Amino acid sequence: MLEALRDTDVRHLLARISVPTLVLHRRGDNAVRIGAGRHLASHIAQARFVELDGADHWAFAGDQQPVLASVRQFVDSLAG
Image 1 (cartoon, helix red, strand yellow):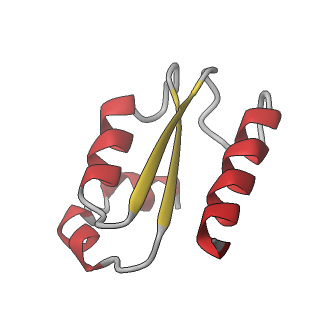
Image 2: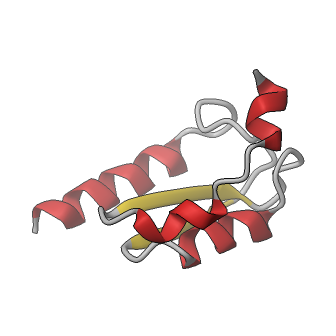
């Protein structure tokens, strides 16, 4: 499954995303370079890119407080 995720290129679909989207990326992510996160966010019309400290790839690993704060702020911005 991980190989399928790695080998699937969805960049051509990003412009079709038409809903507010939060893209979180840790600066030291060893699985995916931060430039990929920036690219993702820059090609989604309503994306917000948040760069977090840390090296974990998974949002549920490492320091979760900045992740939760970013998600809370994003969701709150949708309600306003």
